[in-house]
Image (cartoon, rainbow over the protein chains, first blue to last red):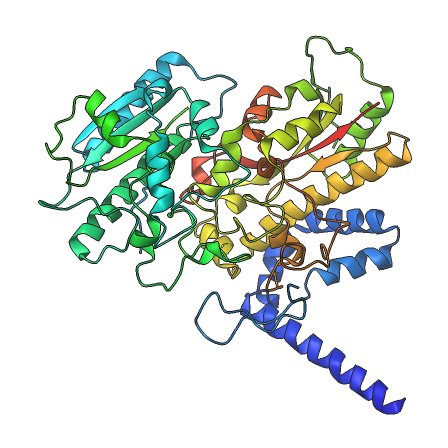
Length: 90
Length: 212
Length: 231
């Protein structure tokens, strides 16, 4: 049980690290924050809309964060080679 | 590979209906623009003057040794003939090929001079299509000549968008040719009164931009 | 911000006054972030085969890469069939500042997926997300008001805003379906709707915005959405 918990934590941390690397590679960083803050009305409206769609602020925020989930770009320069994708076509 | 698309000097508002007077002026200006861009001959045509030929389409379908998403044209949910017939006017033009350049078909183009001629044509079609778009003819569509894979992706092992989920590596540049759309460019050139090589073996580097 | 008056496009053979509920939906769109919204008859929805080709000739960076983009998605005939089952539609728009939508090199950011340092691509993505959410909310509100089935169409591809960091479109590449079915939908243009002409008919200033535009070329941009309803 403890080992399973540790494995899950490791998996979550790996997932978080992948997300952070992906955000950096796509140049989505805190550097853009001042420019996003200028459009604060837009982002507030989006947050309110998400909350309304999902039925609660917490679920809305969850959906908001889920759109920032992803994988890092492949390390080679070949544009069309993809990282291992768990959602493989059958 | 960069195409020389100039920034628009002015962007026209989309109108509810096209003004015939303004359209006539714009079509004339587009022809002049094509000539300045290197076109040897240009002409404004009605959509009725576009000549479709099933034998050309069949020839392209049979010439599938070097396939791409635009050679032969692979859009099962969309009918390009229906789309072209929805237009009223187009600009048809050609550029001069290097001397002795044969018709390259859909295969790879090994001679860099010939490939560069095709690049010039693709550049010109993109330029005219872009000018139409910014003039308020937002549905303008340009067709070039040959296989865009031979022209733009000669260094690639395959045409990437032919694989499911893969994108074109030259977005906004790759386009089908008139022959892939089943259009008889030679017949249209003949109707336009352009001087053509007698044995018709030389390449006809023609482009067609349907305006509105 | 509420519009001072609604614009209603009338067509022959349709009743002049759609149900009051649809007017309520129109106002609701304005409270959820739309800058303008009108009720139009579905006869005023322009479905044109040339529009889908604009995604494919020349090939857009997302064409073929998303299940909701041409050459995938509905054919023009299928869209005409869908539209024919409805009487009215709410057509709305969200204005976008020209400094964002026509920012220098924004097309490079969009094509490559790598955001620019000035946040223009992210802010533009935010506008697209807003349009998708307004469409979904209108459909939700219509269902709550008892309108039955509705059909929503947003703007742009859904993969860029919602699956930007994912390697593939799950709906396209697997049998698992969409990652965000509560958010994604087809866009009007991917279904062959001539959005620009519809916007012009609704009285909105619409300008063609391409990759070589600059902010001073146009006063503003607009993103449009459409929800088909039956009273």
